[in-house]
Each structure stands twice: as structure tokens, then as C-alpha cells.
Length: 200
Image 1 (spheres, one colour):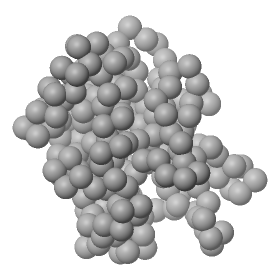
Image 2 (image 1 turned 60 degrees about the horizontal axis):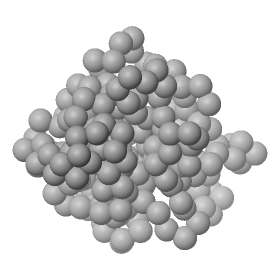
Image 3 (image 1 turned 120 degrees about the vertical axis):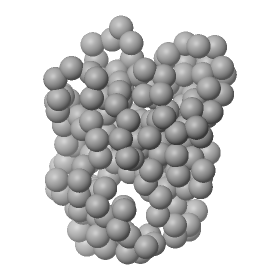
């Protein structure tokens, strides 16, 4: 899939905002520890940061956690979040080390066939590369095996067009307003499921 850059230049994909708050001390501390584990190599750091968010921050639907967090620092502190929140956390960690990172979205079919949902993931562009690579830190479980790959995509959910599923190709520099409004305004995850947009 060809990804479409929402904004010219890369500076927007390195910026901090309310959700991707990579200037926060907890984000910086986490980035420092992961950077040391990666021996200061950008590609190795991206792999380590991806695995950290995927594997040590459980998806709240998998763990049964009803809390709603959306700011990257809060996701790292609470160690919980849905796909959008986990994407904000990974974007913050990557941007903290100068790796341009975008937010991406997929429209997926509900498991019970009753409708669609909007899934969040990221795309990164390693220093010296002209190519964006999508990565999905959602968290693995039976039937879901997302891996950090640069040669090809291995996302949590391959899109099935016959079910009305869509890969949105736009690289967003900030969270989609509809997603952010739902995350900020929901008291718990059941309310969030009712208010998240199902399409862009």
C-alpha cells in the first residue's frame, strides 16, 4: 500500500502534542533505557521500542482493564490502553529519539459481524530511509501475530476488502480528531466502544 504524507516535510512527524507528549519525564526515561538497550542504533531502538509497547502494555480489551488512557505518558504509567493509546505511546518513544512517526488507521469488521471499528497503528521512517514502514503495537494473542518488519508488513490485522475493511493510506501527524475526542471523553472502555468513530 502506498502511504500518503499528510503534511510536507518531516518536522510534523517529530512534534510533541497533547497525546504524543514525548517531552514528559516518564517518556524520556523510558526512551533512555530502551536507547541504551539498543546500543544507540536507530533501527535497533525502533525494534526494542515496538516490542516494549506491544508486549509490556497489555491491550485493555485483552486484559479486561476498563480504564481509558490516551496520552502517551499515561499509557506508559498505567501500562494499559487500546490500540490508539498504544500507538500514541510508541509514536512518543520513537519521536523522542528523532524517528519520524505517523499515526495510521484501518477500518476493520467487528468480530461478531455487526459493523466496523477503527483500528490504530503507526508508520515510521528510519533516518536515512525514504520509505515509511507501518508497524502495529496492538499486542499479540491467539490469531494475532504482529511483528516489527521492514521488508514487508506483518500487522495485527490484514485487511479483508470483501468485509468492507479498508487500509487508510494517510500518514497523520496527530491523532485523528474523532478518535481523540472519544478517548478524552469516555469514562470507561464500554463508553469508549460506543463513541469511537467507525470510519474516517
